[in-house]
Length: 103
Ligand SMILES: [Zn+2]
Image 1 (cartoon, rainbow, N blue to C red):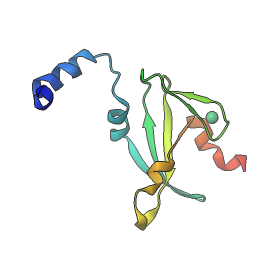
Image 2: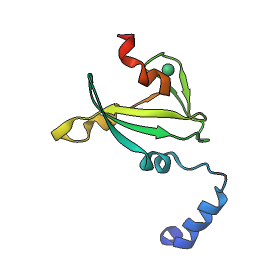
Image 3: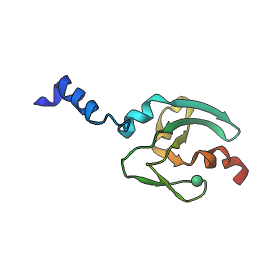
Image 4: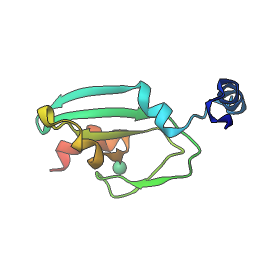
């Protein structure tokens, strides 16, 4: 019942006043498109958050902690839309930037 209450939402934001935001929120703001020789990438910068999640960086196969700033990126599928989103990966910034040198 209280789900639709906007005041409840406001209190949630106040409670999280440390700057930590839900992952989906932090993903929403900083998406950009990046043309590269290996394709068109959708790149989102992820701010450090306390979700506690750990991902595996495709570049170095090391852990990417959600507690550190990193990048989520996936290849844009062009006219066929958003299936690339399911293939998104969490990268260290440096690894994403240098991914083509690793080939
Ligand atoms: Zn890495």
